[in-house]
Image 1: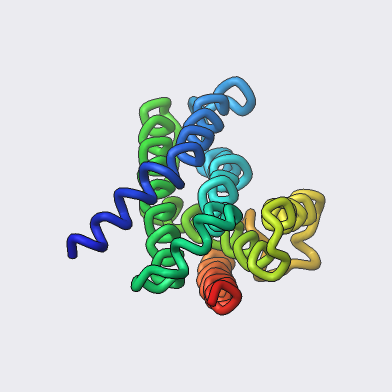
Image 2 (image 1 turned 90 degrees about the vertical axis):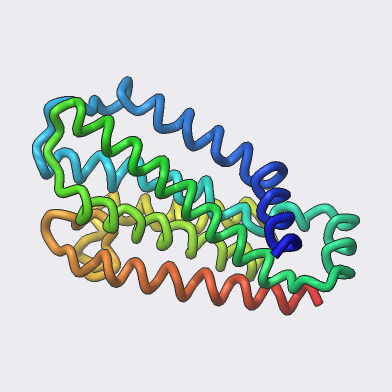
Length: 206
């Protein structure tokens, strides 16, 4: 247990600090771009889906980034703890931080008289976190390139934003108020992509 607590502490201290700071800054900037007061159900969903969900890219994609340092990569490889296990901890911590930030943001929106179904919208955005992050993690694992890891979910987002509902169908990420089943599909896609990316990267690290 002490070893696992040490791993969590190290991830929080060295690997998630800057992602968390950038995510907070990104969310704090949103009122000047979107406005988060007196929104109806549809408007609230759009803010959460099209803006807040983007922090999933910030939080999840750099999961392999610390090992870009060859010395750190060799050190981790020499340890008893599986690198796949360490990646898993990073993903879980990113989800926890993302969930906390999302909950705080939604409470601020409610304080600003925005209408929403808390539980439904919360899960819907978490599913987007996983989808955006999972696509990025898988792209990063396959390419061994952080930039490509970022670009893959951004391209997916741009396609969807540019009218991709017709082509993406159940994979369309912005259907909170029109087809909520897409959120379950996105959740599954995100989990599958993350597991695949972690397994692929773990094999390469051996």
